[in-house]
Image (cartoon, rainbow, N blue to C red; front, side, top):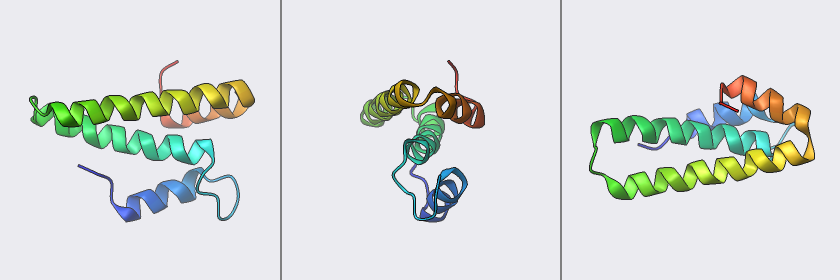
Length: 89
């Protein structure tokens, strides 16, 4: 249900802005998106897993807040990340 350590490392390598960057909004949004995708596929199989559904909603809200922050601070980076991740809006 969760993403593996190697997948998370790959995402960090792909979306980081500088060497050693693990906390930029782009990296956080990419990792959250991977977790959201994994949890969504889990919930398609397990319809009554309400605890995981609540966790999914919390992850989506956290990603939304990070996207709003990025849009407010740097609109170009915001447009780039939603295009790279194929997110709506």
